[in-house]
Image 1 (cartoon, rainbow, N blue to C red):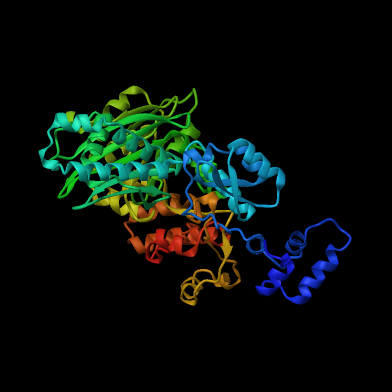
Image 2 (image 1 turned 30 degrees about the horizontal axis):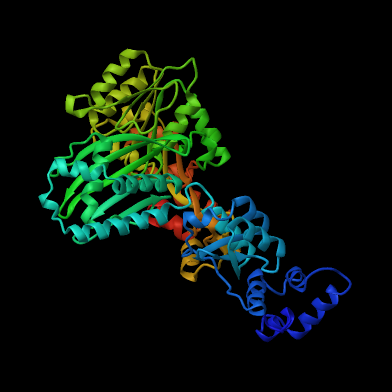
Length: 575
């Protein structure tokens, strides 16, 4: 233990000045406070500064406890969570059968040291870290799912060793052998852990991508793919076979694309998984869509609508007939908005019928139907049958062709409210898309009540977002749209334990709301050009996508970079 006092160590390291130390000592005099606590209260030092100085004073290690820190199950079991939280400590690793390293907020806490010695019957080797890092480690590793990544790595290493020992050629395996391998404990556990990690992280998809020598596994979280621990190349086909077995797919077929689905339980809820396989040059690529019913936002207030737009949307949904169209690219949240609208509309007095491809989420008290092209049950044929089922409200997964659109419009004219989607970049483009597939302008004008275009942007983590000054080139792009942009406080991502170091937590919608009133209807009938219609709609109050998104940037919900990535200037401002 060093003979230097804490204040001297901080002074010698340049963390505080002599005058700051004198002021802190003066404030400490006559109290029972520690000098470190006084310096913290006065704002002269950070918790990290105190922990590092304490490490020097006691001649013990300072541990950062960053993302690379991993804790095995056997170490978690040494100290109960209640003790770890009470004394703010966490076991780092077993040095031997008789010693364990423990990271502590206060290495001088005799009661904490005695508690750990009594529980473990081991000698305690002390280390120090900051309170927030220790608590984050406790949050991370004392959860039931805390060991997923570590266990995945262990299984992957085991598989690599097994594959190297066997030296077995993948081409030589028959269906029976693959079946045996697919049900082998490491393979089963690997697939289970990947599924659990996907649910834990809120992933929408899992991608298994075979390369020539290795395999990549990626999870799509908040719309962004990120790599996780993969299986070895030698055991990849067994993993694929395991997924096929779960999905009731043909394990002997490797040349054709296949589809399947299965369910599993995780964290006390049932998760649906939709599986797609695609033959590629180095093996079958598998994509698993995770359909977590509990993550579906069926409450319209949670999607990201401004209150005024939400009120207007609800009024349109109360109309007895007409068509409400949602537009945007794949992954823009159209299905979620449709489901939230259906949840708002459902009541014992309404017969709601959907026709989807596929049915992604099952909603209570709503009749849902999946199309089956192989038996000629497409959208058009399904709609004809649905109209004989006395529906009040019809939801069509997508208007893909003239026949489907024409039947939907006929339903709207005969007293039904129809909700559907269309793939266009913005709201005004939907009119031209319908004309391109063969629908007459007068029919479009007579049936369309609302077109809602949308995108999704990631939401900044509220725990760690921080002010930032944007580059001048970004500001110069935004000034023509919002002259007051120089007065805004821009926020950017940082990353913390609450958001798994991503800086973002969840996504929110950005919307372009085009209600078809008399003036817009007349422009459609007159066949005005797309640019003229867009300008007319903006004159009547339609706010372009980018302008709507800028409100979220201004309020610190997302970043400029995130918004421009989801909604480029050429689309978002009607250019």
